[in-house]
Length: 163
Image (cartoon, rainbow, N blue to C red):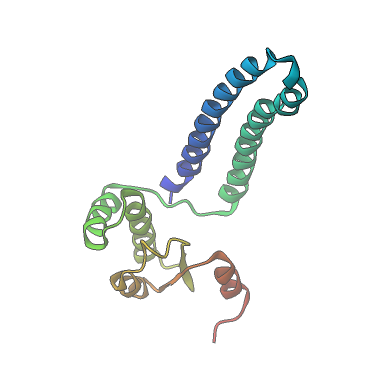
């Protein structure tokens, strides 16, 4: 679903903000510790930590962008329109989904119910807690889709012929 494309950027951004806060605090601590001649060896051992944390931010962002470019080159991005949004509101109430989970589920069900693409189709999520409702399991077969709870399981199902 299109809404899923922006979600990892939010995650990376939130982690980056948290690390920036840690870096700011660490920089202040390092500044204070530099005043002690007895602690210079210890200070030198932690001085690069802020640099490393900033480098990680850049690496995570670059990795996310390159991964999304590869995925979007081969994926079908499911749009969000008024019908999908209205159905997401219904799913949210019916299954006690978070807004994002409701939107994702609605996009998938809407796509499968309006396209004639041959199956098998799998809805893969590691979020067993939010997708454990029996109504969800009942809803998916109506659109020739099966709920799977791990990506390794999905990979096996795609690679092995179905009985």
